[in-house]
Length: 306
Image (cartoon, rainbow, N blue to C red; front, side, top):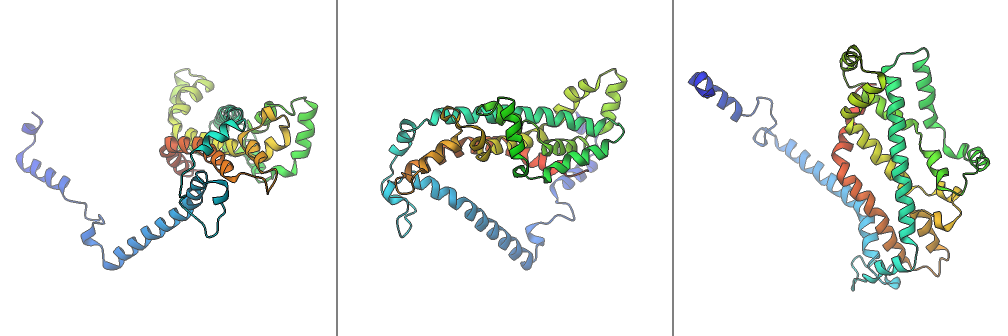
């Protein structure tokens, strides 16, 4: 029915326009030999760089399937002659791996949730609510990113010890639940959202909290995914914080637990250690694979305006 309303000449012109590439398109036929060589060289360099980044992970996985004497053999044996799957069973039976993973997962999930909640809420205030000294306060808050944690970790430890939360998981949650980077990331993304949406919602009687919850958060999925991925990864891999605050072995994270395997350099079963390290990487790999699309989109769009 639609085709009958469009003249035949116009239909042919539309089909030709849809089939033919645009005049400025970079088709293989239009590329010069130098451009083709440059593209091949670029892809080759990217493949080499990717292989260089993945090589340590490959060696770690292969080492987790070796016997203890084969891990540091000379010359390096990349592929084990016999795959020792028993290492993954032994790491579970000879350690508290389940307890370490439980503690680490609990900390990572709670800290990630609080970082997203507090970061997105504070970012909305800096991005959409006008009040005296807003820009100065934001710069001062963001400036804390440049202050290394080592410069104030002793006063922080004394404070949390006085609050009677040292040697508990609450200590790690409290020191990581708020972050200036999350506020910065979310604010940059909020500023890419048209402010007309907020103004229209205010005219309809929606409160600032309602605008943040019903409009800003649903539109900020890429930024939320990026912040969640970065926070989850950082908390999962954190070693220094748990080392300072968690002295009870029942509260150890997976990083502290695996460190206990290296108590004696000459009596360490590195095959079991690499099996534990491989297990510790699996959750991060799964989270990244599930959220990589939103992660790339969130990082790209968060820097468009500032």
